[in-house]
Every structure is written in structure tokens, then in C-alpha cells.
Length: 255
Figure 1 (spheres, rainbow, N blue to C red):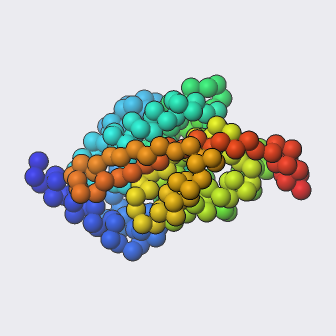
Figure 2 (cartoon, rainbow, N blue to C red):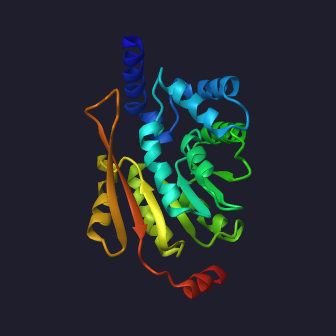
Figure 3 (tube, rainbow, N blue to C red):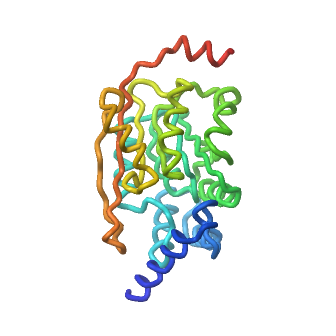
């Protein structure tokens, strides 16, 4: 038990204090590839719950930047609350949260668009999501929201999102939210969950939601990182309260 704890702490610092890992979202020891092998070997194909358990089991011996069960239950509850038909995830990593979101989307023909900037992570996430039996519901795109938003609108014919989960670079939370707002891709009642808003890079987003209560009705949720209990992680669950101009949205799309 003590050995696993030491391993997790070392894995955390190896990832979080490595410049390449922080810039690319991919660890220098290639633990993401080891995760994929573990999932394919131990999880039941087509069983999303089995895949999630395999990821958590793998993570009990190392550290991956995934939600885990405690924060995952907060995400699950938010997906059930907003009951989205079309959802967006920013920061796929290896597909853990995408599987949690997609498996809780109960509406017929529901779809999740998940964006990831790292090509290795994209390939790993697609394979894990396919193993979970959710590839028909989840589309993983490589790039950033700024690069892909035109494709999402014109080629995927998505005009707005009912639910958004942000767990990518924290300094992109506010710019990406404002981009979605500018593009009229938020509608009244859209749910927005942002992970790790207590970190310095996300403080401008946290400040924005606090200063705009008429636009975003927001609740803060707190969760401890179990093996690093001095790190308290905050999530925000927000409801977008502004009625978007649908006519203006269509004009912008045609233009």
C-alpha cells in the first residue's frame, strides 16, 4: 500500500512538473500506452462500466490526470441534470470522462464531440472509447476549439451544445467559453462543468462566473485529491441563463 502511494506521488510530480507533459498533455514515460494495453486486456469489450473500472484500477498504481470516481460522480450528476442531446468535451486525454459523459446521455441519437490536441492521446482515447462500445456516440477531434469550431458548425451541423465539460488547459477555459458564446453555440439552459478551477491558470474563468451571476448560475463543488490531500480541487457547475439570438446565429452561419 505504501509502495503504491509513493508510486502515485512520484507519478504525479513526474507529470505535473514536466514541461513537455504540461505542454502536450502526454507523459514522458508513455503511461497512456500502458493504460490502453491494460484496458484492452482486462476490461470487457462493449461494457463502459468495465472500462471505467479498468482505468481506475490502472490509476491506483500510478497517476493519470483523470477525474476518478469522486469527481466523476459530480460529472455524472451534472449530465443527468442537464440531460443533453449534444455535448462538448474540451480535453479528451484518454477518454475516461468522455465515457462517463456518453454513457449517461440518455436521449436517442445523442452525441458527444470531444476535442484533444495531442495525436497520441486521440488515438488512445478512440481505441478505449471503441472498446467501451461508445464510438458511435463519441467523436474525438484532434486540435483546439479555435481550430475546429468552424468544422463543428459547417461539417457536423452542430449549432449549439446542451452541455460542455472543460478539462483542458486551464488558461483556455475563459477564452473558449467566450468563443462559444460569440459563435452563439450556447443556449439558455446549457450546462457547463469546469474542472480544477482552483488552479491559478483558471482563476480568470472563476472570476468571470462569479462576476456574471445573471449570465451563469453557478455552484462550486469541492473534492480532495485522495493521495495528495493538501490539493483541494474545485469544480464549477454552471447553467447558462441567456436566451441566444437564433436568427442571428443562422445569419452568422450562412455568412
